[in-house]
Length: 56
Image (cartoon, helix red, strand yellow):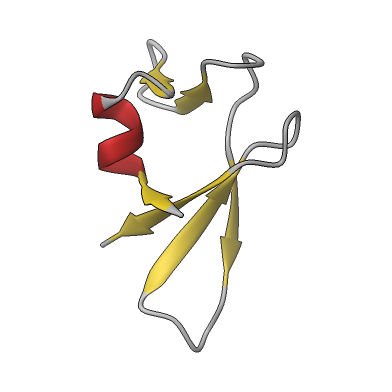
């Protein structure tokens, strides 16, 4: 699983005018899934089910 920063650099993700992350493959806005046992948030595309880690 890549990070959101690497996804932006590789062209898999982009930001819209409101700074929301968008999946380039299907054009869907990413949803957030939080796991309390992890230090990162998982960002998931509802259209193609790809996931990225958001470190923060």
